[in-house]
Image 1 (tube, one colour):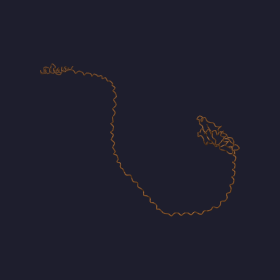
Image 2 (spheres, rainbow, N blue to C red):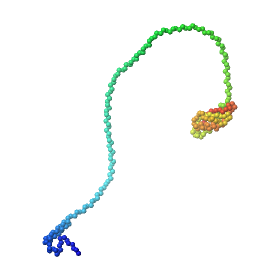
Image 3 (spheres, helix red, strand yellow):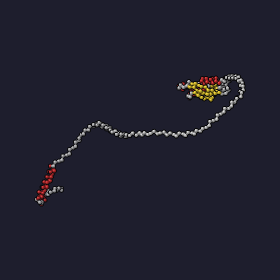
Image 4 (cartoon, rainbow, N blue to C red):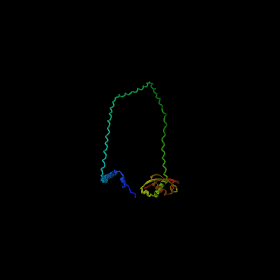
Length: 244
């Protein structure tokens, strides 16, 4: 078994061979090492750093009042420059213009004409004697007017108007709207009577509802034949139709 050999240590078999001062050197080295170890042990230890203490900070919410509004800017008024003084214009008195008289027109020359001759009156002429005036003849008697001839057309027209009015039917819309008026219609009737033809509106109310009702009544009427005194040809009649 191998044994460890300390530095500075000599086995007993080799101790007699050394210098006697070697012992003192070894002792001094041991003392120095002991002093170093003792010095290290006697040195104060560095205390551990203290742990930081947590500080608690209390926070209070404070509502600050709103800042005051900014003061309005005071704009100094602009200085008004003084108006320039206009000196009065000097009044110049000008003399009134003298009107210029136009020259007088030249006078026409005076011509002395001889007086006209005095006419000699003619000799009086004696008129011939007038012939005798015959006596006026007595006036002719005025002939009597012819006796009126009865044609029967007026009576037929009045009867035709009554027939149309009898066939008049007023629609409900005219009654509801309270419409009224007179329509003048013209139509032709043959000698043998019957339905009218060439029917048209020639005057009166312009409302289309009233006109349509009048034409409907005229077309629905059947007229009688002419009388003997009426001409044997188709005649035109114009009658007013009242709608109320």
